[in-house]
Length: 105
Image (cartoon, rainbow, N blue to C red; front, side, top):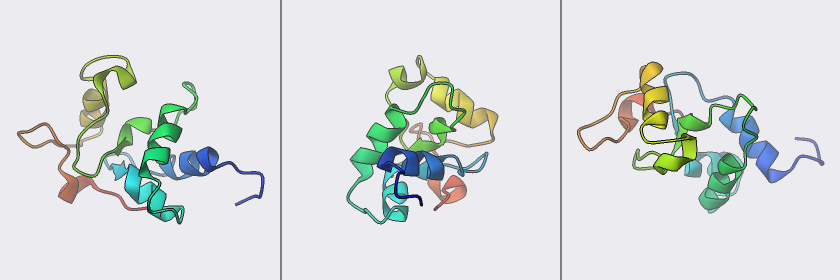
């Protein structure tokens, strides 16, 4: 880490590493940064990611496997569709199967 890196840049660096077909959580990224109580800040960083950054923001979800609010990715079902196109599966409540798809940075 360079001293000039911002927290958001550090979050984006980790998010960029989430493999296709896997998800991680806001809290897992916060712990990887050494700030276990900063899950909400990770969420803000993900929301602030540059639109054309190519970051796989859709792969960062909450700890229970729930997806972001529907407007986050441009409309209802967009995030789920992106994840399903990568092979991510969901339970009957519409949550990501975390036992199968969780990636810990």
